Amino acid sequence: MALKISTIFFFVFQSIIIWGQSGFTTIGGANFVGYGRAGTNMEGIESIYLNQAGLTGVKNFAFDVSAERRFNLDELTNISFAGAKTFKFGTVGLLLSNFGYSDYSEQKFGLAYAKKLSSAISLGGQFDLLRLNISQFGSKNIYTFEIGMQLRLNKDFSVATHVFSPGNITINESTELGTRFRLGVKYQPSNKVFILAEMDKLIYRDIEYKIGVSYQAIKELQLRLGVNPSNETFSFGVALNIKDSYRIATAYSLQDNLGNTPAISLQYQK
Image 1 (spheres, rainbow, N blue to C red):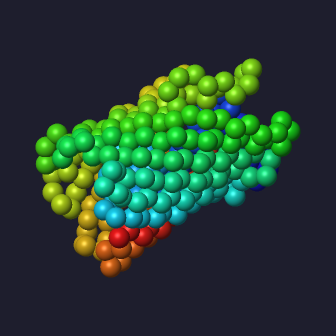
Image 2 (cartoon, one colour):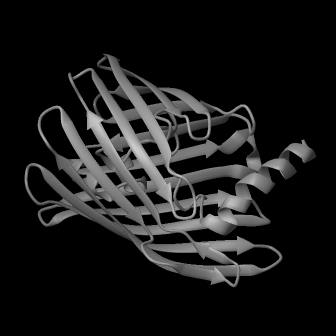
């Protein structure tokens, strides 16, 4: 176990420290793990994690609590909470998340806003306070923002874009918080099926390609599949809808080299 943790920390936290590939940008639990972490085109409370423009899909108010244990290690647990309320002037959301353990952890606090400009266009953004804690070096607060858009082309197709932390933010002499850009397409040929295709580019890293598929088996049950060929990750998940107000989603991603990741998300909306 000690060797496994050391190996994972070497590969994962090299990415965290150098490129910001961390709990700051990969949160949301089973909402996205089941889709291979695609989700720029998603609408509703879960959109606060990947593209705030989708918050216009919140009808009145909604809450989400999500958790995942990356590579099945307690030290790499991520827990997040989100809430959103729709007003006449738009939708306001709040996000809190924590990733890591006592020696290394990250917290994210976000205040989001989204507005539908027309029946086809939604815009959203979020101001972020990011807190990085390393036991040997202390803590550091970082202020940044993210912005996104969703555009419905017709009844079957929509496109979406999102940018996290535009510009160059220096944490210390050797560490930068990298900008992250996402571009996604959603194809929904029927009320039962939709397909997500997404490109995810973190500065200084190669583009990742993600594909997610959803099938609404019955009104109460949704099945999800996802694949990320860039890092050889495959995933699957299910979501249960209860009385149109509650949703319980679970997901599991498979990665041969680093291990598997279970996730769960609980939602309430009204």
